Amino acid sequence: MKLDILAFGAHPDDVELGCGGTLAKEISLGKKVGIVDLTRGELGTRGSAEIRDKEASDSAKILGVAVRENLKMRDGFFQNNEEHQLEIIKMIRKYKPEIVLCNAVEDRHIDHAKGSKLVSDACFLSGLRRIETELDGENQEAWRPKLVYHYIQWKNIEPDFVVDITGFNDKKIEAIMAYSSQFYSPDTKEPTTPIATKNFLDSLHYRAQDLGRLIGTDYGEGFTVERYLAVNSLGDLM
Image 1 (cartoon, rainbow, N blue to C red):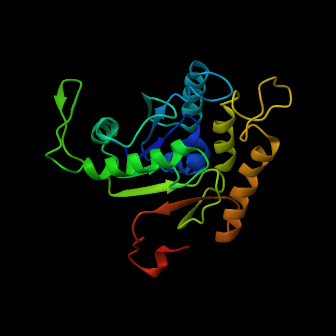
Image 2: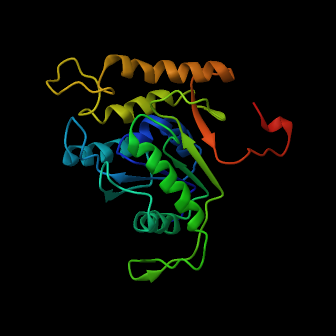
């Protein structure tokens, strides 16, 4: 299956938090979108890997993605090395996305920056035909995505561009809240974590509203780039 967009996240829920509104919008426009989680989030303070497997599946259905896979790398300990790069390359060559979205280049959780660089490096290497990979007994062809963008996570990194997600922020929040083990609930007996507070839950709304304000819309999601953005004419800009 060829995808238009493939979004990678170090943990289940990274993609929803960082670019869930953008994915929901692109899907509504007829784009084929997939998600690949690097780990099962097994080191998380709340819930369990099994619970998050179910939550990730439920969230994917809410967003309407065509496919979601989990590479089951070691949460907290995966590295940007040949072994892990090859696993990412196999996914890129399997789905041949035009656009790849990946973790923030800098963030509070160490896996986010690691995952960001791992996926970015693999996107380049995937285009080298002398790197041979095989999946399900078949040799894969080289494929390099045209664009690699990084979504914003915990830290308020200044975006290089903002996507208008007006009309899709509610879908994003619904997909995020499918991870009921991870986020704020006044009735839970689970330990409190930085993302399991009402303040964090509220921040999902006010960050999207603030980014929307900055581009003259109701809601927005920000991204950073690895190379200059290019437009055919000034009229391409909002």
